[in-house]
Image (tube, rainbow, N blue to C red; front, side, top):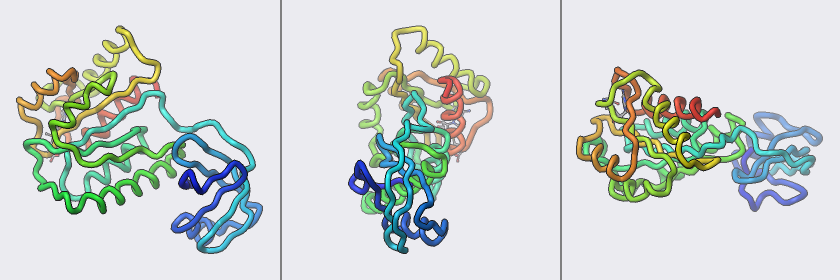
Length: 249
Ligand code: SAM
């Protein structure tokens, strides 16, 4: 279970809300049963249940554990805001594959109308999906889901990453070759032990040539994901999986 850092002391941990309900009612935990808990940031532990009620489960820390399931490469998926609930799919599957963060962004040919009024509610839902996916994938960290960014702001943030990959449907090549070449070129230069990588994926309508040029001018490497045009959510997963493979994670 992931708990807030405040719910975890050096000696014990407290589950409340949905987590307490899940432990008490779904898992039918009883005193003496063990579970894994994490604050979603730096601390993970094995804990032994002390007291159970449907709204509160208390457990004693038995042993602190090293981080598990966390790749060395920190990959942020920048996904042009897709329609319907596709962003949820990108966050859920991307978390399982190993993404460190998600940045939804606006671009010229995106087909949804971004509604700032719905932002807080959506961010809360996306955060919940990341948490549940991280739990199911046995990760120690919950990926961050950031607020929707403009194209301009996204391009301005490119300098924060050691490697930036711009997935461009017009690039072609074979699946994985573009990412392999970009990773090899990065490795042959001066490189960080745990690089921050930004993977930029376009909307249903694709990227414009101008966006591709701006991304390249900002320092991004243009990569293809094969000869077939993938749906936007598929492209994020394929790009991420190729990156995890190439980074050895
Ligand atoms: N119309 C489809 C849809 O509704 O999802 C396909 C959209 S595709 C143009 C969306 C984005 O996925 C592209 O802008 C690009 O970032 C990425 N993508 C899809 N296929 C790709 C490929 N073969 N190579 C590189 N990027 C690709």
